[in-house]
Image (cartoon, rainbow, N blue to C red; front, side, top):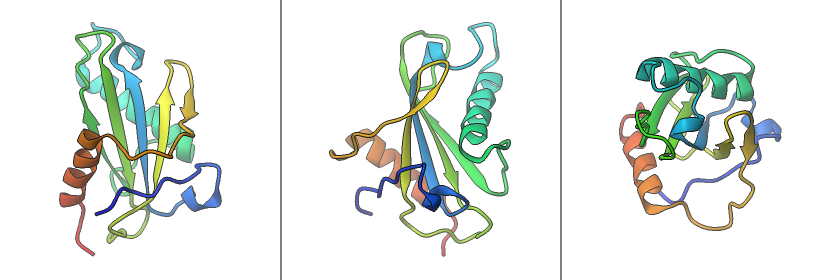
Length: 136
């Protein structure tokens, strides 16, 4: 797999076609606080992503989700969420486009600097996610 394609989420390509929504944030910016259970904060963030992109809740029949470095007991830890939307097709393409956002704690902003390659650890995470995707 080469470095994934990155698309502009305002384009019609991201509507209901397979797409990966990648969100970069910090642990203290994820909804909830240290007294909130991990699962509740995690689910709140995934729900927020789906509401922003598709104006609906997370649908386990259309998406899968992953995270990286979601250590909510610590503040200021960079963490990542990935919502892999395969849409109605149970056999998504092997290299769907990627939409990259940054969560500020109040808003999702599109990261428009797609000129460089993804960080190696992130590229490896996407490869791991590919291994768990259904085969075409």
